[in-house]
Image (cartoon, rainbow, N blue to C red; front, side, top):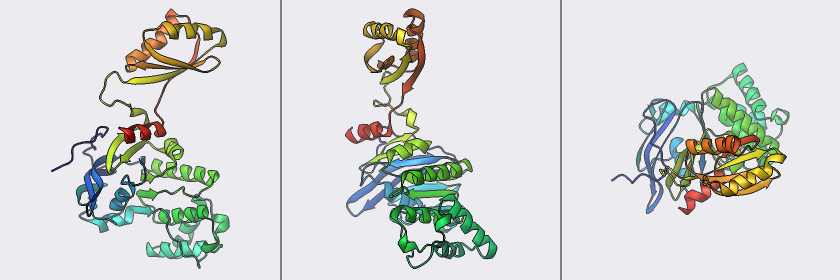
Length: 328
């Protein structure tokens, strides 16, 4: 019997473009780690897996990497059924686990050349590909350093370089930014965005929510083995399926219009609540969707005569989304 659909889940696309996961379940004895999960990640997407410890994120990544056989479900990548034919997908998967080991008594370039050889690269091609990957992760200056002398963040960079050696079309990254300094995390973001632009599917699990929000085209939020939301960051509402869910807009007025704005906010039946944020800057909550949002802006300008410098809907942050789905 299939599990009932979680409240925030969007059904996967029927296309075989990119990665399609359908009704995935993973049991460990009496524990259900992943329960009826479905999502679609198109080519050229950077997709974040979010959730507290024990939510099922790593189990999903291990299934996608063909390291774990699920209880049931379907996983297709670029038209290949990776559960029935894992060897067919191995050449295009790059997997970077959390706390990935390195061979400490090898120098960085030796470590990478060893794995490049495992992927069938030899001679000038191998040397050039190692050089390219070191450049991608900003470790060219450390190419001759022994791996066991590297910091945690530098080890993560080297493991990422190893993951990129065979130019995979699917990248599965479990906490890749762990231990990285801010500049290294910026480099990581730029590298992953560039790979997505080339048509890769990038699946990224991380507890660093700000990093995911900066680069992901879509997210899946997991809780207790279930997928509680999947979709774009700006597609989330606290009350899914409710046409008049509450939303928030932020707007900036000229300083001489600030008093008019306060008076209008106090009297308008369109506004459920509001708060000042800075001189001439306000946040206002309303019930409705695009039409109601447009009416607010129109009335502010045409009826109240408020000079509006900026006006935008505030999207839920990943922190807001995670708190909402784990408490519901």
